[in-house]
Image (cartoon, rainbow, N blue to C red):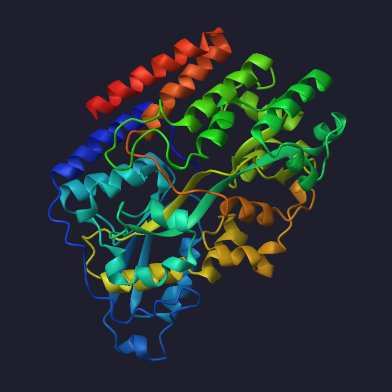
Amino acid sequence: MKKTKNLALALVSIMLMSSLAACGGNNNGGNKSAEGNTGNNESSTAAPAGEGDKAEKVELSFWTLGNVNYEELAAAYTKEHPNVTIKIQNTGDQTAHHNNLTTALSAGSGAPDIFQLEIGFMERFLGAQDKFYNLNDLGAKDIQANYLDWKWKQASSIDGSFQLGLPTDIGPTVVYYRTDLAEAAGLPADPEGFGAAIDTWDKFATVAKAFKDKTGKYFSDLTDLTYNALRDQSADEIYFSKADGSFIGDTNPQVKKAYDFTVKGIQEGWISNVMLWSPEWGQGMNDGSFAVVMGPAWMAGNIKSNAPDSSGKWKIAQLPEGAGNWGGSFITLPKEGKHSKEAYDFIQWLVNKDNQLESFKTKGLMPSIPALYEDPAFVDFKDDFFGGQQTAVEFGKAANRVKPVYYGPLHDQTDTFFKNALKNVLEKKADPAKEWDDAVKQSKTLAERG
C-alpha cells in the first residue's frame, strides 16, 4: 500500500491532527489487563472446545484498508472463538479511511474497536496517543522480538513506552531491472551479477551513463524513485529531528547526497523524463524505455499490471549501500473500544507468523517477521513474471537492510518541496543550487509554522 504523497491532503492531515490534539486528554497508557494473553506470536490462540459457549459474547468492529485477506482470517478466528463476532468495513481510499477515524476520535464516538493504520499516516495518530490503547499494557512487549526492529519502532513513542500498533506488511525497496536490456548493454543479467555491478552509488552512476551511451535508452525510470532510494537510506532521521522536531534536511548529508545524485542523473541523461504513476511511466515499463525501477516490494504488482508484455524479462536485485522502506501498515486499538483484551487477542493472532505467511501467499503482503525469510514456504516462492526468481528471498534481504528512521508529521509536505525542485531541474533546466536553496527555505518556513 503506497504512501500518500499529495501536498493538499498532507496539509489537511495537519489540521486534522491539531483537532485530535485539542480534544486529547491524559495519556494513561490504556487498559492494564493482559490476563489470558499467551504472548506467543507463532500459533493460533484457539479456545478449547466448548469454552466459547461459556464466554461473554463480544462483537468487534474492524476497519481495514486496501487489498488484504483479513476478512478470511477473521472468519477462521471466529470459527475457533464462537463468542467473538468481527464485523469488517473495508475502505479503498487511504485518505478517507484515516480521515474517518480522525473525525470519530475528535467527536468521541463512532471509532471502531480495531483499525488498520497505514504508515504514511502514523505521525498523525502518534500525536494522539490518549485516543488509543497502549499495546504494551496488553502484552505487546512479549512478542516484540518476533518483528523487525525498525518496523516495530515506527509505531512506538520515541522512548518506546507506548506502542500504538502491531506490525503487518512492509515495503522494503529493491532494484527491479530488465534482463533483456542488461544483456544488450553487456551487463550481467543474473541478480547477483547485476547487483554486484551497481553495489555502490558511484558504480550505479557509472553503469547508468555507460548504459545510456551504448543503448540510447534511459537507465533509471524517473527522478522521484531515484531520489527516494538514497533519501530513505538515512540513519535515524531524514528532514526532521526526532528529539525536537526541528528541520535538519539541509544538514543531513544523505538528503544532499540523494539530491545531488538525482541531479547528476538528470544532467547526464540517464533518468527518464516521466512522472510517477503517469501512463507514460507504465508504458515505459512495458516497452523497455528504461532498464531499472527502484521501488518497494509491493511495486512488483504495479510492474506486472503495467507491463504484461514484458513477463519473464524482469528480475530483482539489491539496492546499492542499503535499503529503505515505503509503505506497510499496523493494527491499532482505538480506546473507544470496550473489549481491549478480546481485541488484542485477535490482532496478535492476526499478525502472527502463520497468518503473515498466508497474507503473503494470497495477497502479496510482505511479512514483517524475519523468521519467515528463512521459512521454506516463503523462500521457495517463485514468480514466473520475474523469470521464475525466488523473489521473496530478495525482499527478505532488503527488509533486513532497512534502518529505523524518523519521518515527522511534516515529512510529506517537505518532501514535495525537494521533489518539485528536481522536477524544475529536469523539465525547466533550472539551476540545481538555486532549487535546493528554495526547497530548504520553503521547508524551514513550513517547520516554523507547523
